[in-house]
Image 1: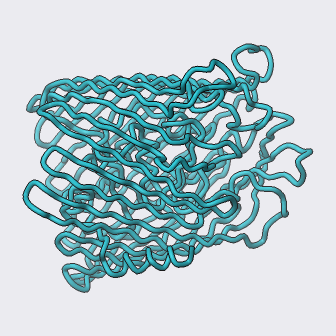
Image 2 (image 1 turned 90 degrees about the horizontal axis):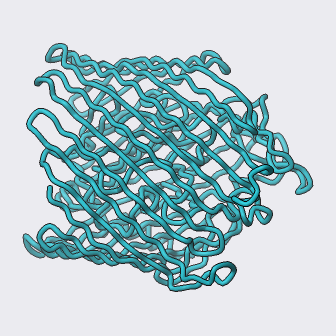
Length: 621
């Protein structure tokens, strides 16, 4: 294994695989990262930001957001349900509660539990790009961005037309424990776009259904998403969106194996957002936003046959209002803003609770010298349960040449415990802890970026300390799991990524991408030495690699993922997609886990074996 890691390091450092500025995989020079107040071209970013754009998403062998994120360097997707049924997401070794997810800049915070955070009404066809910002990001995105943030940007199509896509797949194995039927998965997505000069409207809907890949893992998922943009004039724009998703699935082994063999779960989420952008003057802009999210979680420990026992129902609401602004000065740019969030829950196992959060942002970006860019800011937070706290940060970059830049940053952040962490009463399995302290993170990072025509390389080292780390622990198997401030977690990490493009002709291109992450985590000042529910499965080594060839409207992509967790076996997963476009039709064939690897991400149940699927998509816009 050491030879493998050395080979990866050598390949990266010799720029054999590097990430190009103008490539169809990561279009660096065309992406503007919008951090709610200050907008920055990614080539000018002082932070470690990774972008997956729509061209990449088209080529990847995945049909859900969760599957696409599997290929992101430094991102840990731990799936329970297959093909996006349910998944936890974390960045650089954090827990699934320590990464904030955003949709077009609006935070998706699930105050019940982050297990439901990726329950979003997003067919991959509507995603323009995914921005992964690594490290504490409180001064940019506020609370819960402890180890990073994932911002999903949707498409803004100016043409009118419609889209229909359908697929079907199977592992060609039979459900011998139940119906005897062959496992399968099918889906259909449809959408329509109305694009005018001053306004754009789109609506997308999808339906996915599967009987799973082993006993009681079937699911049915329905999604609906509307988006509208109206440009009043050159200085004023209004944007709105509404989404609904209902996901029902078999939850065999999800939370309480082996007793939950027949468990089922239904999660319904409604999301609405309206925001606007106003140029008051050539130098001053304001951006107000209001966001609402409702989530219903119905967990049935004994399955659908007995609803009078072992059932947990949770109703959560959150409403948030933000006002962000930026002012350009002679020497730089000032960003400032404020937010208010109210969260409440009504639950059979958690009780009735509510809380408020108020945050104030301030940051300043300038060039101290011609090639030294500095961005400094802070986030002042008041929470009704945890009172006042402040989280400053600074990042900087120095351009040694037009192609080579050194970057560094120091950041702090906070994670407020979820209602599940605090108040869950689900004996004999799990109980919360109302005495929990909030988690706090400090991280410093240094690295470099190298860009030259068809190749690009990013290498970074970081040191992070999370105090009051929260995990679910127990001293013996005879007592329930309980949330505890386990101790202070120290993490040293290295991440490298790059890509290289070969242009055979104007119509033929070969792209290589490679990412490697290494994490060394250890606790100091632990409160006890119990069993840990989530920490023991965090990643230690991760390799992500894609090779794709495109000739005119034909493309083939081969993807490899390697994960080695702190405990448990390491594993390689290999996938590929072949696609061919014919006028407005695109035909594709996917093969996932082609070498039939047996692997585990959560608990002791295996994820899907080799799976084949085929589909077709028609797009008229």
